Length: 497
Image (cartoon, rainbow, N blue to C red; front, side, top):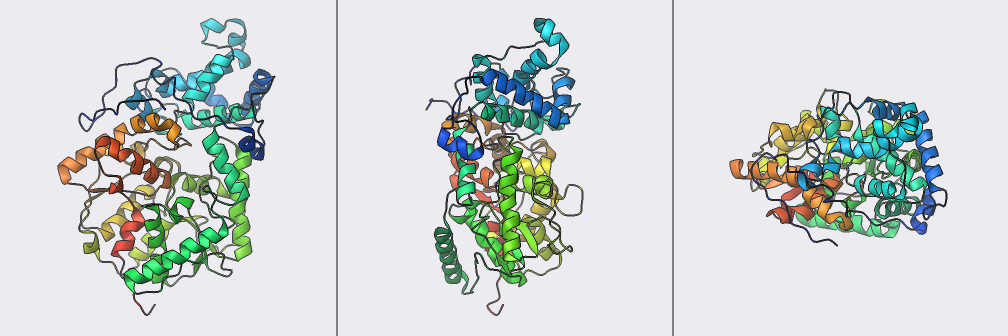
């Protein structure tokens, strides 16, 4: 693994760095092997006619995704996106400017799919598809977390995430996939979750949580698994089953359901909210994962589906679930399909259905990180911007000390944690640390100004990423917390419930 220096936090803003061409060209995730490729329907190694396969796949994507065609044709190199990417700001590699990364695919598109590119390639920036270009794709399209911050500032609305997803889809089609994402998808197909946790392990974990909560509160709070006839199916990231601060959020979910008197269950068949099919741009694999949720809901006979704290899982659920696995006309029409756990808890708070002791969190001074897939690809509740309002209102309901980070680093303009989009793997540690620089800079500012001690998030990847990179910047790994961890500590349970 390459040695690297952690960028220095200078002030609350991150300056545009001096360009260092090719400084991150060495950064590449491990290549997937045949045993991880085959279950997803991809070749196990670079196919002999890979160039023809790649060009044909690009043509297929251009026909089926009208937006991709528009994105390929509409960029005018205005520069609005150049300094918006956290990876460019943290690495200084000009290929991490969104426009430059896009052009790695756009140049090939122009060469093979436009008349000027076929006859006058040098005049229009058209590029032959070579093994060198394929190598650049593999490096730099795995230096994009699909966070879509650049798209917010693009005057033409070009969505870099769609371009990244398309390029990864092409690479998988020729046999050059990423080990991390593809191995995880295979685990979901085989067992039901990203971590490969079988049903007995899940049951033991949940039983242990019941015992822990009983010791803590004196109340019998259940964490049920595969219980038919429950009202709610909770679909949550598998990190919630074992790792801090994730598991503390799961404990909070159970306490909220208990206090509300609503029956619920987890499913061993669909024990994963995450859908890494999104990260690799594969609609087929996205659908296979989503269908497990439908199957579980039908088998268990639930009336509602609620998603736990996971950013891209909520993006897939909110934006794609009905298309991939719907219609969900067998669920109770009084409730949204799907529903986020924050929507559920916020509604209870608004109706004063929960007893909360805010002083239980007085040892914390909290800020909130808007996870990019929630912020820029979803909504919550029945209000514009509900995805920004609802989590903050929950935190304020359970904490006396809350402070936002700088306005240009939150909300729709939020910076990515640096580990999203299938990049949460140790072979990309340098990229992850450097990509976290803008968020770490904003965090340091509120730490110094307001004495903030903890940052809350509602994304499993964000929590895992921050727990890993916070120490690189002089913070403690336990300064990242789940929103429902804060709820868990503040909620007052009645032993009679």
